[in-house]
Length: 272
Image 1 (tube, rainbow, N blue to C red):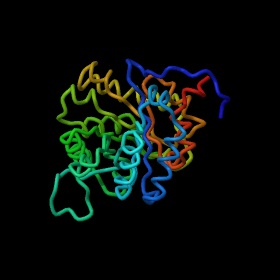
Image 2: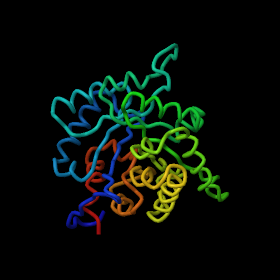
Image 3: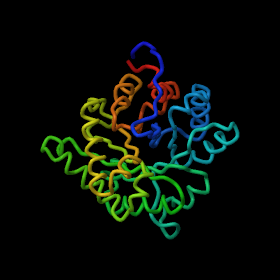
Image 4: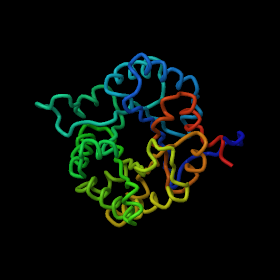
């Protein structure tokens, strides 16, 4: 990790406020979740939230516990969920609807994460329906796109990401797209210790923004926030977040430790 430097004012390109999201995946029971969010709240201060928006995405069983801590202590961290069903209710055993999440004051919902696409066979059409459900209940979807190592080696990465993007957001109007979050997660860099270089990440995020410009116009592209997700750590966050088309991070393993996650949130303090 670099030595601490003078803080930069992170307004993001075109005034986009960076969003740093912690995806806890299937980790932390509700007791551990309470401890983690309390430690995170202690590690951050009001000035940190002025520069960066923060969200945490615990497992479903932890949402109510984390919501209670955030509200009781007036912590300006947004509560997020990791997934939802596209229907509001029905005979869908084991599923959780966007309507249920909204009642817990959830602000952001991850849809189309690479693990859901790979392990549960979620298609762009399913991701699209989930994103619409999230929007229907006045929450913001974090729509994930990204290529596998096989697709990258075959030179298909840009086409794969563009297809996922257009399919997942099909039917959305420009004003809606401008308020969304898209997370670019190179599948080969998730949980492997491998990380796309800042230049690699910037290239794909710029490609995503360019594609949005083609499909929905420059205003939508300027408003859209694009996160990078793929083994983000305190050591590489400053360089990644300096890229002009990266507006935040979707953080996996490093978000489970409050100290590490706080340092990622505070990446501006360590920028060269």
